[in-house]
Image (cartoon, rainbow, N blue to C red; front, side, top):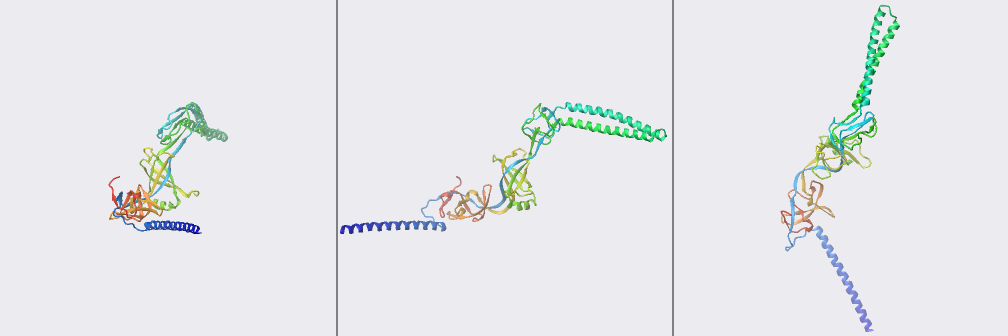
Amino acid sequence: MEGKRASKEKHGLRGRWKIAGLFAKQCVLACLLALAAGGCTQHVAARPDAPVIPVMAAKAESKTMPVELHEIGTGEAYSTVSVEPQVAGIVKAVHYTQGQFVKKGDLLVSLDDRPFVAALEAAQANLAKDRASAELASVEAERYEKLFEEGVAPKEQLDQERATAAAQKAAVQADEAAVKTAQLKISYCSIYAPIDGQTGSQLVFPGTVVKANDVPVLVVINRLSPIYADFSVPQQYLDQIKSYTAHGKLPVEATPSDNSAPEQGYLTFVNNTVDATTGTILLKGTFTNRDHRLWPGEFVNVVLQLAEEKNATVVPSQAVMNGQNGDYVFVIKPDMTVESRTVKMSRTVTGESVIDSGVKPGEMVVTDGQLRLTTGAKVRIKTSL
């Protein structure tokens, strides 16, 4: 019996120790949670023996910042012309190479004009014949006019001669039109560039038979200077855009895909309807594109500048960190300790963030080394990385 009682007491003691251990763990966990919660809401003073953390820092500034929209756009040729033959014929010579930049008036393609030269000569012969007949009919009409006045010729004969002269005159006019038509067809045998631009692929070769207003076209020319950049913006910006454009042209920048220096241009077109499927409106910027850096169909980064905000508080964009409660920065106080401060950032422009609240101009913010910092940490400012 005593052995059984001792065994029960031993097992009961172990149970009490287990309960006590669990209670102690819960107490420690609760203390850690309370400490963590307190650290999120209270400033923690730096320990005297805490290490000084080197950081990079910059001063918040007050400056004029642009109000911009950043979108993805595509290049569009200022004009595109598909050069087509106006007469049926055989290609005699091609005077351009595919991809060549041509000027307005440059000879592109020559057609065999021999059939049209023969038609012109025939029309000129008919014109000469009918002119002679018209002159004779006019003389006859004048003669019968005098005979009728003298009472020799009847009125019916005079009317007939007058009609013959008028018919011959009309035949001359028709022949003159035929000559002009033949001359025009001969001119169509030499096809010139209607605009400045770059030619596309060569679509016809010597010996190709072409027809008027039929495929294949002779060549496609794209005008690249100037050039458009098409882009769409959300419809909520439409009123602002209309308001700002009423006071002048809005600057537009287009950066090619190689991220080189942007091309400068102006907003020149706002579409007359909003795309109901996407809720966006199409805009176009026009660029001089003298160096042909922008290309039709190429994706470009477009920046539309709407206005300028004066006295905006600006910090380097790398100073702004993102946390569970939103954006924040580490501000360096006069005693060289830091505090984490929640900020409201409106936008980022060329590596600088515009801060609406949370930081004042003149305050120092940490730009590098934030991952080692906590509120109250002691820091020193490095001059370089």
